[in-house]
Image (tube, rainbow, N blue to C red):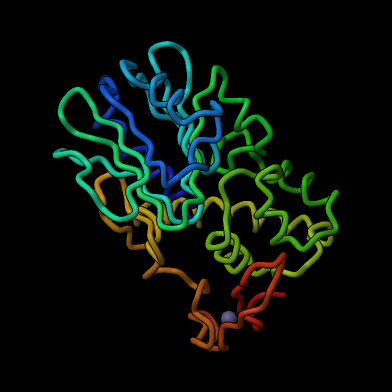
Length: 273
Ligand SMILES: [Zn+2]
């Protein structure tokens, strides 16, 4: 699933391409009946977008937020396999094309989604969709002390808290594993058991991990591509994620895979305590 670094890479790619452009026509495939989460009918979202100029592209957690001229916000969540690509010549066909948004320069935003779990909303206030998300981990306002406070009140495994979008927004399975390795913290440790020093290490590790991934334009383990359809390269530079039975770069021990919070979790049994 695209996480903060991937969604931010898409956002930055879309900015120069779509801001100032007007959506001429929007269509949603009848084969994607659950794509539009709000308004209730997909046709209403299409009608609402038609004729609207895109004034900005924002991001909150893993959500893209398109600010429209009428003050409303078009919210897109790619979920597992969704991709949103700008195509200068239009979307064409494609087996997994679920929605297309033609722009006034002849280009289109094309939404393809193999597993049909992606969601879109057209809302007056984006808080209707993203209002319950936790803080942005890369914002200056999110300090180690803030992380310490939210871990201190949770007995769940620290990885589960990192994945909880209501606690911190934007971290998913890849970057939770990578950040915990970077911080040398075992993913199963109860969140409240981390020492002050470990919290500081984890806070720094979360930032480093996300920034490095953005430097590589995201990780393309599966379906992820950026706004122009190009893969990222960070999957070539991960330390533990999907490296089961490969040697740890730090100590040579074999990376192990376990389940934490129902998710496949990769860690070094020597480095992470
Ligand atoms: Zn190791």
